[in-house]
Amino acid sequence: MSRVLAYARFEALTMLRNGEQLLVALILPALVLGSLGRSDLVDIALAPGQDRLDVVAPGVLGLAIASSGLTSLAIATAFDRRWGVLRQLATTPLGTRGIVAGKVLAVLGVQVVQIVVLGALAVALGWRPDAAGVPIALIGALLGSVAFSAAGLLLAGRLRAEAVLAVANIAWVLMLVVGGLVLPAADGGLAAVVSWLPAGALGDALRAAFVGEVDGVALLVLAAWAAILSLGAAKLFRPSA
Image 1: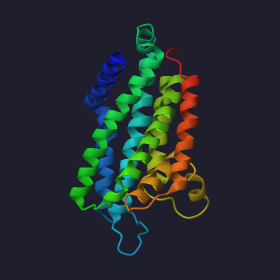
Image 2: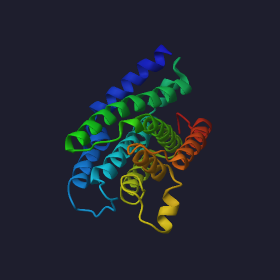
Image 3: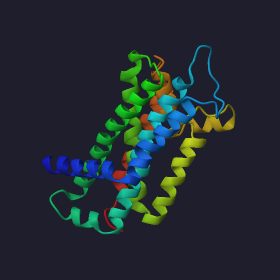
């Protein structure tokens, strides 16, 4: 266990010191928070008395979780795999399972930093979430983290590094624009689809939690994706090509 924790600490510090990783994990979500939360650039359907930040801030926290869990983890792991780093680590006492566990713990550590920083920024901008919903929000965040981390490892463990780079970045853009993560999907066929996907379910779960409600369907969808993707990653992840 000590080896796994030491490896997780190394991975987390590497992510936080890497400029590209920091851009995706913190800077871009912070820019989205400021631009959508405190401007009228994009029309947002609001309930009476609801502030734009009540919609945007939970979505940005979800985007941050998806950024580190899927985009950053998939890209970093894919290039480690390509350069043979994972193959060498797999021959050490850490082993393949230790590598996976260390990377997941590192992502969880980075996500704690993301939630604290972005949450504080949102509060500074005027966001006033319902404190009673925090425990449910943390459950949703944990389920989303497991689902996106498993998806990132699944991509990195099966595709070439260049393909992972393209897929992970495209997925990030789609989650931001039409994925129902930062903003609820518009009514219609698209909304019916995205609410059953990890990004849409995470956005719905967090938005409901921070106004003191529980979206049980979204949490169940997230739990199902977390289980399916974790099983897939455990079965299909390979440290070498």
